[in-house]
Structure formats: structure tokens, C-alpha cells
Image 1 (cartoon, rainbow, N blue to C red):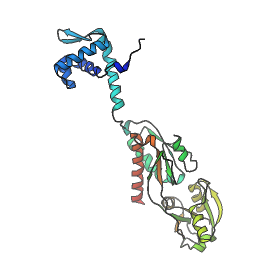
Image 2 (image 1 turned 90 degrees about the horizontal axis):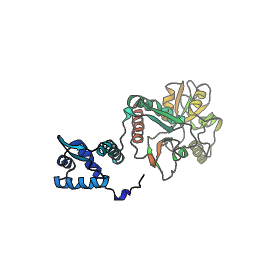
Image 3 (image 1 turned 180 degrees about the horizontal axis):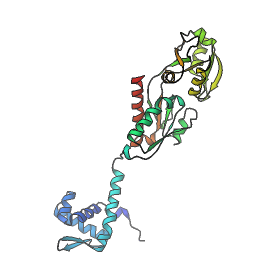
Image 4 (image 1 turned 90 degrees about the vertical axis):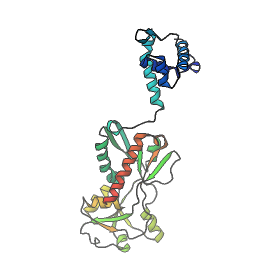
Length: 305
């Protein structure tokens, strides 16, 4: 095939050809493109020279396509439609969307948002599936490497390629089984005397409770470490141990398990759960829609908690 120098080709002339196919009139094709009749005629001359064919000739009912014009009509229309699709703003229609959205989150935030989020998917995007990725530490690496579209959690400093949006503010509380001797009230002394379950998420660094206690010169007896809040809560419900966990999650679990909620008898920093995503998805309409669903779910959760 002969090589063509595209820099010497006026692709705008293809728009005139498309208009000629539709209008079968140089004057009407020019009007469609905002050209005067003389300007449209001159453009047709350049188009014929560019494609090496007359393309249209006069017939009984107006202009008729030559055989080459007939052969080019479909490809030119497709080419221009594809070009319009490239330069047009991307759109996302949840009702017809397919594929999978992957979110990295520990069970704490999964338990809080998943029911509301999947309900929204079922209602607005029934063919779009949701996958909760296996968590690794704080999940930042999963988002950086493209293994997760979003991550939910509590994050420290982030790489410059990641965006963050806070979801809500939470605080730590304690749970014990219903009927536990301390269910009526919990002092710091009684808190330290109990056997504790603690949830180890990343396995790196001390928890906020340990940090607060070390500043006071106190310690607690951690009898059991588990990787999931739900496991810890179920074990507490069947023992005399105590678990410290985020308040919103504690209230949710207390609706389903025989647990009593107690104020944590020491001051710790508030929890600031957030979602993070990579720059490459920042302007993607599908990801914008998913992020807004998470924001809406959390807003509703806060209203009913």
C-alpha cells in the first residue's frame, strides 16, 4: 500500500464529504458546515484532488456518488464518528455499565459500607460487580499498582499519585458481652485489669491505645490477637474479654451480637477513615460515580446511627 503523508491531508474535508453524502447538494452541505456556496465548491475541489476521484456527479435527482464515493461513504462516517468519540467528554451510564469495581478494605469498613454500596449497585448499576480485594497492610500498594480501584482505611502520608477523601470521623469504644461485670461502667483501672482482644491489621507499629497508655505509663494484657474485627467481636460475646474498636462498627455489631458498649476510659485521637484512589482514575466517570456512591452511603449511615 502506498504510504500517505497525513500531515499533507486536510481531514476536515472528510466532514464535507459526509455532508455531501447526506445532502446530495453542495449548497446544502456547505450550509450544514457553515460554508458559503463558493467556499463549499472550492472545498469540494480540494477533496476531489485529495482522494483522486470526483466522488459526486450530477444526476437526475441531484448529486450522485461515484463508485469510489459509494465505497468511501461508510468508512468515512465511521472514521468521523470514532473521532468524535475520542474528543467528546467521556460519559458513564450506570444502567448499562458492565465490569468489576475492586475495593481494598479491611473488615471494619467493609462491614460498614458494603450493604449500602451493593444495594446501590443493584438499584442503579445491576450489571456492575463489586469485589473486595484481599487486604495487605494499609492497601496503598494495591491502589498504586492498579490491583484495586479504591482503598478504604485510615492512611498516613500518601504518594503524590494518590488522592484522598475523608469519609467521616469516628472514635474508639469498648465492647464486652451482655451481662459482663463491667457492663454498667468502666474505669481505667478495671479496663487495664481485663484480658483484651486486639485486632492486628497491618502488623506494623503500635495501636493508638498502646500509644495512649504508654504516655500514661500504663499497660494492658493482650490475651488474643486476631486479624478481623468481626472475629474479635464474636469471641468477646462468648467470653469475659474486652475489645476496643471503632464506635460506628461497635454499634452495628451490637445490633446482631449480645454485646454491651462502653466508653473507652482514656483519651485517644479520633479516627478519620478515608478513601484513596490513583490519579489515573481521578477524572474517569465510572470511578467518579462509584466514589459518589460511597460518599452517599456514608452520609446515610451517619444519619441513622
